[in-house]
Structure formats: C-alpha cells, structure tokens
Image (cartoon, rainbow over all chains, first blue to last red; front, side, top):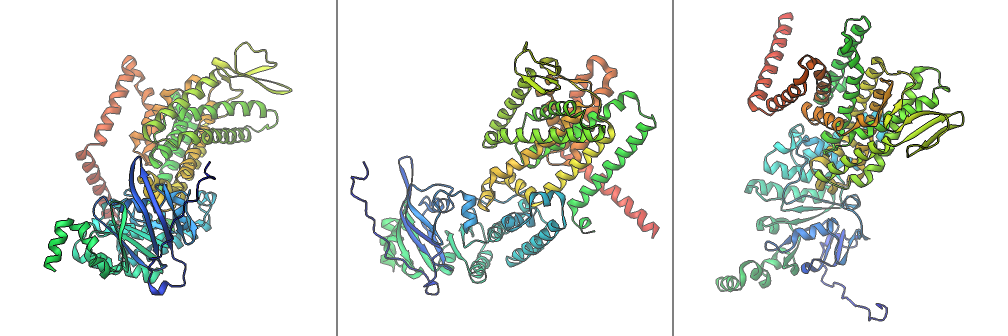
Length: 287
Length: 351
C-alpha cells in the first residue's frame, strides 16, 4: 500500500552552524527533524540541530517548551516518533540508554540523581564502570589484577574530582554534599564515562553568582581539556550568553531561532517567546 | 596492608575475624562436650540460616529488591542435594567429597532456577516483584510436593503424580518428602561454608559489580545513564543469591534423616527476611547476629511453653522499635566512643 504513495520528501537543513575550529571534523550530533508525540500531544516537532565536535551549544526556551524532552530523546529514554539522531555518524535508533551512553552521550539531570548512599569517589567509579576491565570471577576472588584495576580506577577518579575541585570530598557520602557540589559531582560522574558529548540539564540551578561563574569556567575547561562537545539547558541567561557558542531557542516544541548569542539576543521572535507580544513591544520601544 | 587502609574493608576483616574466633570457640566447646545437647543440635541450622540471611541480604539489602520466595531456592538445593548424595553415594566413597559435590550441585541447580525465575521477575519493581517471587516460592514447594523419584541400578526414575509404578527404591516420595541416606552435615562443614559465602559476598559487594548493583538500587535511571545494563546486574546478584540459598538447602537437608517440601514454605522465607531486616539491610554483620539470635531464641524460650511465639514476637517488636529510636542510636554511638576512648587510654598508658 505504502509503495503506491508518493515518497515524502523532506528538506535537509541548510542553516547549520558550527564553530569554525570544528570545520572538516565530523559533528558529534546531527539531529534531523526529530519529533515525539505523547498520545495526541506533540511535545517536540521538526527539531533539527547540528553540534560541532567541540562546540558548547545552548538550548533555551520558556518552561514546558520541551527542552528536557529533547535530552530524553537524545539519550533514548524516549523513542522518537519522527526523525533521526546521528551520534558521530551512527544512528542511535533502537538503542538502550546504556548503549547510547557507551556510544558517547553522557548527561546530568535537572533534579539531581546521584547514588546518594554511596561515597563521592564510588559515584565516580560507577561512571568508570565500563572502562574497568576486570572479570566477575577476578572480582570475587580479589586477584592481583583486581587490585591493579581498582588502584588505576581510584587514581583516575581522584584526577577527575580534582578537575572539578572536589578531590578533598572523595570520602564524603554523596547524598550529604551541599547542592552545588552535588551538581558538580554529577558532571564528574558523566565525564567518567568518556563521552563525546555531555548534556547538562540546568547545571546552574540553585547556584549563587560566584558558583555560576566557576561553573562557566569549568564548562569551558571541559571543552578544552577533554576536547568534547557540551550541550546545556539553562535559564540563567548570563551563563548561556557567556559560554554558549551556538544557541537554539525552543518554544512549544519547535525551534524558533538558532544562532550565535548576539543573534539570539536581538531576535524579535525570542523576545516575544520570553516576554509575550505586549512585553516585546514594550522592549522594542524602550530599546 | 593496603586492605587495612580503607574503612569498609577494615570492618569486613573485623567481622570475618570475629566470626572465625566465635565459631572456633563453639567448635572446640562442642568437641569437648561443653554445649547442651539442644544447643549442639542447633549449630548446623544456625549456619544454614546465616547463609540464608547473607544471601537474601544480597537481594534485599544490596540490590534493593524484595524477594519473598527465598525458601524456594533453599528447597531446590535441599532436594537436588539428596538426589546427588543418593545417586553419587556409590561412586564417591569419601563423605566429605560427597558433601562437597552435593553442595556444588545444589548451588548450581538453584542458580539455574534463579536465572529462569529472574528472567520474568527482574523486569518488575517493588511490590510486584515481591508478589511474583512469593508465588514462585509456593510453586516450587507444590511441584516438589508431588514429585516422585526412585532409584534402581538403571538410574533415576521420576513421575509427577501419585500411584505411578516406578521401579526401585523411593528417594523422593511426594508429600512424604525425601529420605536422606546419611547425615553428612556437621558444624565443621557449615562453618567453612559460612566463611566462604561471607568472603564471596564481601568481595562481590566491593568489586565493580557490587558498586554497579548498589548504584542501580540508589538510582536506576542515573545508573542507566552511565552505561550500566540494569537487568544484567540485577540478574547477577539474584543468581548468586539463589545459588547460596541452594547451598544452604543442601547443608540443611543433610542434617536430618528426611525432609519435606512443606518445611520450605512462606514462613521460612519470611523468617529469613526478618533476620535481614532485623540485622539491618545491607549489613552483613547484622545479618549474621540476627540469624544466630533468631535461630536460638525459640529454643531458649521453650521453658515458656504456650507463650513461646508470643514472647518471640514481642522481642522482635521491641528490637525494631529500639533500632529505629533516635535516642537509643545516639546512646549506641556514645557508648562506642567511650569504649574506643578507653582502649586509647590503655594504649597511651602502655606507651
């Protein structure tokens, strides 16, 4: 039946922007026409975005615009109704969340999800899990190989914790850490899985201005030292405009604007989405 | 000495050493005839319930899934152990080797059943998992209740209904249970098995597998997001837990002259669960102490006759209340501090 129907043609995106330094390198994410329906409700539609190999990308939009849904689609928590996600050129369709992580997407959560009963260093060790090469038998017998791998894992964990300035907290219980430290620990844990891109869901929520400034510095260092891409959802515009190189604005599940921070700041559609029609008019008259 | 550096492994070594010291003391007292006959008869069941509590602790405390059918795995171990001993009795003359073979066979069979039951069960969460494991425990009990197995020189013969004309001598005779050819269990074997099970669980919990399992318990969504295959790790813990319950079953069966399937009912599963909860979920030391106390307690209360189970229940309630009482916990902490301070003073005085 479907053979008789005319093939549905979709336009390929032509408005792709990535940082100049990533030209000629395979983009880490190539999202095309992504969409998902929950029952009759279309939560995300026609989401098309390319993220360069070492780009810091921002995803902003009013509450309920579908930003976290995009993260859940990228990590295959939800299976998309339409469209495709190419992670380093490989379609992730049908993979489990765990498989997608092993392929290179790590994430943090809006409502912090740590292994609260475990120590800080053990949280990071769980992130390293798939790179610790030690068989179950070797673990149960505690062979010399087990001690060797554990020692190496411990050293790597301390290195990663030190990167986020948390090495002195290694033995604390993760659940007892202050809020800001818990958010940083989630980032360390995600980095431990050796991702190609790390998704940060509101990393600055609940942080004070000095912590936010520190976080911005950390995000840039993640890009520079690990040479990976970062994609973040954030409501703190200082952070978004400060660190993001490319920004996509989402409203009612659709992209309403894409561009550099300056382009986004001056885009009337974005101002309207955030402030409403009347607010946008006031804004324009003031400007 | 690197073991000594980490706090948890230090605690594990202390637990292990304490168990070895207490068990050796009891072992020699038993050899010297210093224990009452009722207590000496309880020694093997104590070992059995310690292993049961430790293995259920892996599922309930470490993995965080409520399993109500643990006695089912114990019965699989018990019955396959009896079959193994009866059919291998001719081939293996040495009783110790025969017992080791039976324990291994019982453990492996229970592990296989653990795996098969785990496939559907581990996809469920919380209450649902509890109900399905409860059902599986009952199913295993009822299947064993109508299982008839005989032995003759040709080998084993089995049927699933009464009145079947099977050649040879009955090993398992339906509701009448299985006849154990010889009493192979003793405190020595139980002692060694407890130590082995403790070592396996401690090492497992400490390895990357154990960390993964605890991570899944604490937050399955986050665990998946860092690349852990949840079902596979749940399965590993569940199968190891089932295998250990199977081994405990063999040890239990070989302590009696006959065993019946109805011994491994819901009540047994619940009493093992009580040991785990009372000792503290995830605490191996607690499980051991609770298993010992709860196995001996009914015997100690025999003097109270009719009120025995009533007092048993009241003791349980009191311990639970005390354990959740903030003031009592505080008292325990200060007591511990005082004792360590006393030791420190003594050490300082020596110097």
